[in-house]
Image (cartoon, rainbow, N blue to C red; front, side, top):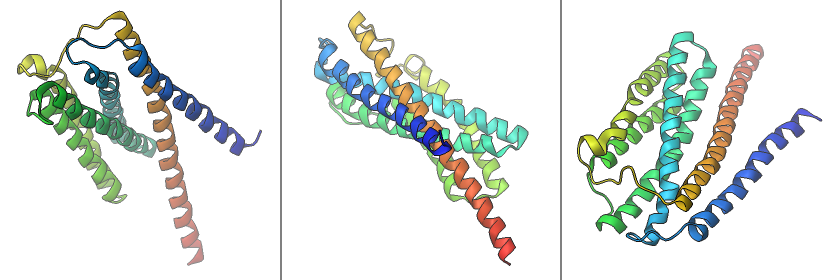
Length: 227
């Protein structure tokens, strides 16, 4: 089997599994899961909102750890993995910050409330958005990469403040929700499906960045030969 066939297979299998998983998750959320007595159908947002938040945190942690390894070892693969992690985490962060206001409108009657967890989550998202902008558009100099890495390292601890925001500052955001057994099945099934999608996207984004880097080096080498 050729390397091209292996790549296609390694791409298609997770893609197909993820696609099936998305349809299965929608079945679980909208058909299998029981109706919540207080919020009704709006509560079903929870099954997309919470797994997205967890994976957003995980991606930012990957970014920070890879950034630390990049500063320690100066190995470009850690820098590329950090960038890929931030990109995928930000995508899940968009889901969090989109589903959150939808849930808030149903629960509080407003799209946005400057509540501690919402505010700290927005700040976390903005910090890593800044990392992505700097790393993507700041050029390829070592100074830019180091500055972005430091930003990621200092930005990741904000995850802790997002986690404790409700209890520490008495926020209105739901916390420690008690779930029926069927609801737990739906939540953790959705989480597993999202993990599959997260890991596949992370793998593909890292591969794109690595190959783009190789092409840039090859192009520069050819330009030097041509001169």
